[in-house]
Amino acid sequence: MTASHSLHPEPLAPLDSTAHLMHSIGDELAGRLRRVSLLGRRPAQPALVLVAHGSRDPRALETVRALRDRIRDLRPGLPVHLGHIELNEPLLPDTLAALGDTPAVLVPLLLSRGYHIKQDIPEMAATATARTHVAAPLGPHPLLVETLYDRLLEAGWPTAMDAAARRASAVVLAAAGSRDPDSATDTRRTARSLAGRLGVPVVPAYASAASPTVPAALRALAAKGRHRVAIASYFTAPGRFATQCAQAAPWMASAPLGAHPAMARLILQRYEENVTTRGAAAA
Image 1 (cartoon, rainbow, N blue to C red):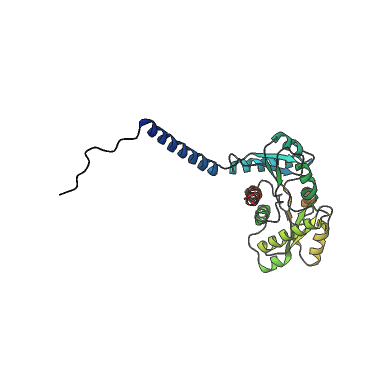
Image 2: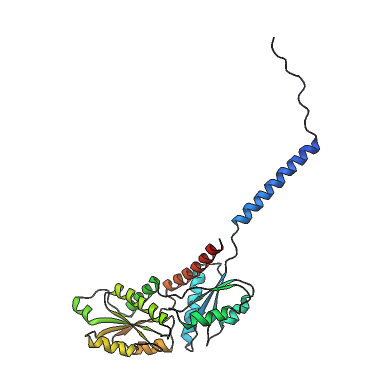
């Protein structure tokens, strides 16, 4: 005899209990979706503030504005602003005041460590309402060497030399100069990297505040039989010092670094390095 099965099914749950269960499931799903959304949401990116030195030469302001525009083209949506240490508007404190409570990373358009990097810019940054961070100076870096090399080629530097021409050739890396020994250390590193790229001696020299001067470096090279000497302009933009150094060239002088594409990439790299380092530290 087989077991009999009940012909009456189990009673269904009351409608109000079913509605309560579905409501609870919906709340749970909504909560999980909110948590996923919060975890996946990226915080607003800080603004990038280019910090230029400033110059009475109008070409300098034109150059840094062109560099700012090139960066905006590379990173649409990234807020990019400009502030000067002196001589040009907008001054950095005014730029920071205009940003209000917007966080910012300040990227100095300076090629080495020195007083502006260690004192002036951090003091100005401290006046900002929002949190600000100062990125590393642009140099030394391989992208600077790439820019210097291209500027020399534009000025007429030969892409190939025979042995005799190489023995007679050299480059003076003309920089602004600083009393801070770290600045000279950074410039020497760039000079060594550029020498490796060119295959001729590259001597760092300065327009002020450090030695050797550009004329002294040229005399020292001439005494060694190096008469085909180019001046590599290690300045971010045209100005009085860049002009003076170029006028001393016995052979050719390159243009300042300017709005070269590699300069824009380097500025964005300094910005990203700063953002990433702070993000890792927070994590």
